[in-house]
Image (tube, rainbow, N blue to C red; front, side, top):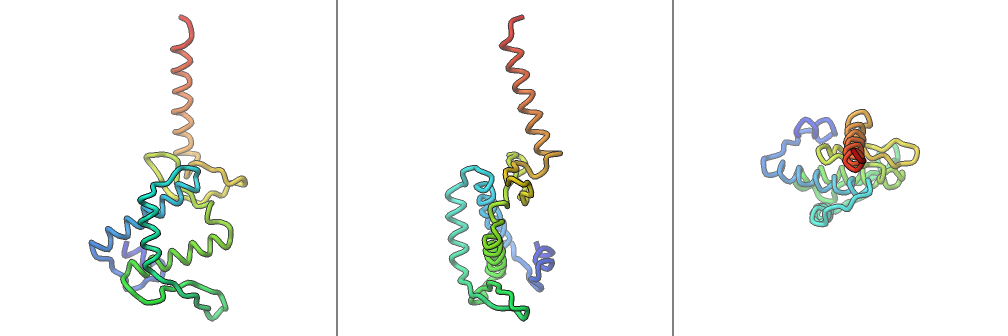
Length: 154
């Protein structure tokens, strides 16, 4: 997680064990939004947690030297607050660019990897068709084949 923080401009950020627990819970709550974008019902408790975390980090709009607006935490707090501020900025930008709902979680129960849906219709269901999509389609095929064989007369 520390390497992730450095790679995303949060130099000097080191998460404690307790903070890592909160960061993982925050990640899982964000994944619930992506599950909703894929057409599934998100866990209300996760969304409540996400809203609580987002609400505790008040934001200000700042204008960078290139005149590009960004959102920043109003008052510097914990490392988690800094991370939340970055995520809030990313959510805001994605919403403005009309791309927020294309961020989805893979429909495979064993995957749930979050991906960006590049399909023209925006109706992709799996992170990758070559792995999760193929497995799901093969399971559905086998289920249909097994059902049709047991229903057909001998």
